[in-house]
Length: 135
Image 1 (tube, rainbow, N blue to C red):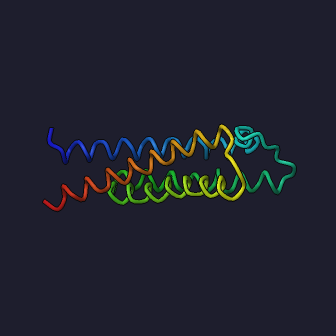
Image 2 (image 1 turned 180 degrees about the vertical axis):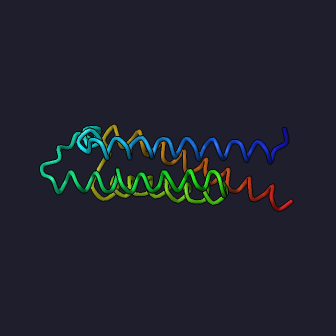
């Protein structure tokens, strides 16, 4: 198997994994916004808060999941570029929180590592794919 094919298969697996993880949180959030917020020890005090979590993590998460599946099928290279930005933005948000508001808790410490790693993977696969397409 040549390097270009390995990059393509790895890219599609990575996009699928990302779609699954975003989709899982989206479905959980749509079904039970409080269950999502339980992961960070936050109680949703009213229906506006519940609606916001359901909308952002649930609704927007489902749209992102569908978009990732579409890009997986139609243009995985654009999917990698999107995921570089997506995971990178999450990591930057957590870093900003630690600089502005203080040390991160265990949940955020774990996720900043995951999000940074996913950003690096997406960026690396994107660059490798572009390198192979230039030949």
